[in-house]
Amino acid sequence: MNKNTLWSLRLGFSGKQSKTIEQMGLSKFLEQSFHNEFDTKVPSLLDNSPKSLKELKEKRQELKKSDSADAKELLKAELLVSQEMKAWWLNKMIEDDYPLREKMTCFWHNHFVCTYQKVKVNHWIYQHNQLLRENAFGNFKTLTKMMLQSNAMVRYLDNVDNRRDKINENLSRELLELFTLGIGNYTEDDIKNGAKGLAGLNIGEDKAVYRRLLENNDTVTYFGKTGNFKADEMVDIIFEQKAVPYLITRKILQWFVYDNPMQELVTYYGDYFRKVNFEIKPLLTKIFNEEFSKDNAGSKIKDPLVYILQLMNELNVEKSNSKLLAFYLKQQGMDLFNQPNVKGWNGGKEWISSQVYLQRNNVADLLCNGRNISRKIQNTDMMNGKTNQLLKVALKWNKVGNNKTIIVELQDRLLFQTNENLQKDWETILKYDFNPKAEGADNAVMRLFNNMVKTPEFQII
Image (cartoon, rainbow, N blue to C red):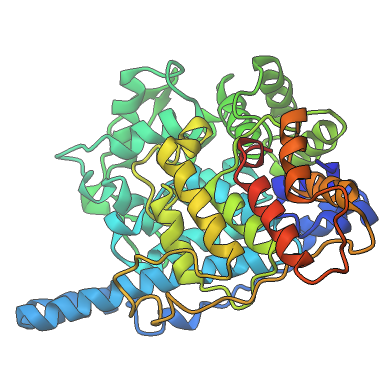
């Protein structure tokens, strides 16, 4: 695979940026990605969703007063908004010329997990997502503090039930286990005392706030320090611990480059992360520049998002249905805004079960034949009634070459490695006397493309 295409897939979601990386060089591409502007306006799809505690209470009162049929319609309306929000985010990923911010937002989305299924307030989920976007390249400690102050997080991890006379440890535990330190780097007393420090941190208008009557003001010992600590002070203490940089550097390496990064790399980049005071931008710059120079293709299984967006980009699919894309991702186990649990998507080998592989091959057949990616959607309202429409697809290839040059061209765009048996198969599809000007040449090359994207080698970058 061409190295620029490989890194276009790693730093985005398809090969769309390959030529830009080649022309600009990786360093300039990264700088442009870091400074690329993004929309901060609340999307219109949220216009009718409650945005404040007052509006939320009014909506709940409306539900209580409504009969069962009307109540179901109100709940269905919010569920449809959540589907539209998935499509809104997917459009950002597809349309952005410098998609690294959205790729990093998705990383944080799977680190600081909050699901609509549990939170049930679309505006809070949007606020959470936007915080991740705005701070995607910022400071990890600062972002951790912001996450503890988000309405979505205190709802998702049950801190609304954490009060001085009835302690709930969920947020305190995940703050240490999943967000910062990892298992084995804290004690049960740290969890219990941390929960006391978080008691009373509850839903506010724009962000979570402490409720004076629900706070616990006991003096506690937290990682060897004694005092009456609240959220920000607790995060400061956590980030003094030796283990703090390594959990996140391991996860970043897994998200972008290696399903199983070597411990030496985790430690090396983690030490640097501490040295730059947990600033994300210099860490990413160092990782990407240094890993770019290595021969490390084939070290990571594509997640469903990269798989489908690369396929659609290669086929130049016009007017893709983003709601249908979101449904496909759900089928593949990568449901946006709805991870299976607080640990998020595990990734790695879980992205390529036999069922997932079969679904991918079926989708490849559908797209290569100009059809939408699913023929079995029942909720046609959600999909705007367009599940069976024909798509306009156009595979681009060099029409002045011969069978072998065309095979090489597609190999460079699609596969991290090939072998003699695959080469023979492809030369059977495009024979030695293949005429790129002949009628039906496009169909023959499409058959070749379809064969390549259904190989195990296409599933890996």
